[in-house]
Amino acid sequence: MQDAAPKPLHLIVACTESRVIGRGGRLPWLIAEDTAFFHAATAGQTVVLGRICYETWPQVRSDGRKPVVISRNSALALSGVFVTPNFTSALELADTLPGKIMICGGERIYAEALASGRPLHLHLTLIHAEIAGDTFMPEWRHLPWREHARRESADTNYRYTFLELSLP
Ligand SMILES: NC(=O)c1ccc[n+]([C@@H]2O[C@H](COP(=O)([O-])OP(=O)(O)OC[C@H]3O[C@@H](n4cnc5c(N)ncnc54)[C@H](OP(=O)(O)O)[C@@H]3O)[C@@H](O)[C@H]2O)c1
Image (tube, rainbow, N blue to C red; front, top):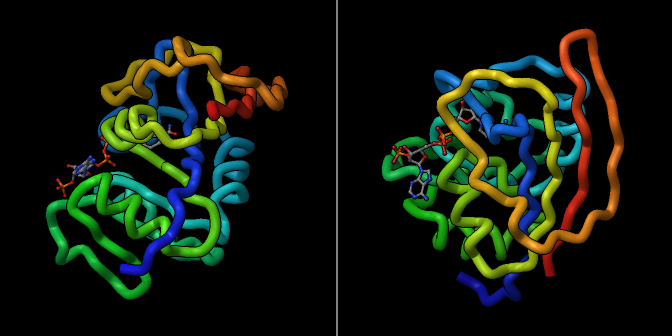
């Protein structure tokens, strides 16, 4: 593997104020504006994601994304998909690939990213609703984030806030 400087991590996540991100292996909401934002923000980038997220995103390789999937099952590898057994090896590989490193979850991968010690960017869609779930974004609000952008939005079902935060 070639040497490369460690890159910042861009965590991209939609969660409720109670930190729910998923239920039953899927998103517990459908917010078209957020889906479009997620696809645009990750297009052309290296995306690091867990095996369940990968299995529910068959189009991950479209739009020039370079997927790095974390799984103990190396047989998952398809053309254009890298599979690594843990978060550390995923980052070692992602550092050598072009584009930003977008951390796309799930729960344990967000936790390891928050604890990584690397500079962080958090692209957060905060959904202002109580929605039941079984998968959670680890608490991030205690960290000294700098806020770069905030935009309020809504659809017929939900109110939500797009936030861009960073941590040096
Ligand atoms: N709202 C959002 O922005 C958002 C974002 C992401 C996910 N989600 C939701 O969250 C749920 C999926 O997330 P999840 O946390 O349940 O699963 P996940 O992280 O997608 O996948 C879990 C699997 O990935 C592998 N894995 C993950 N972290 C690992 C690590 N640090 N080291 C080694 N292996 C690791 C293991 O695969 P093996 O068992 O194959 O070894 C593990 O069983 C879904 O409901 C999804 O819709 C929501």
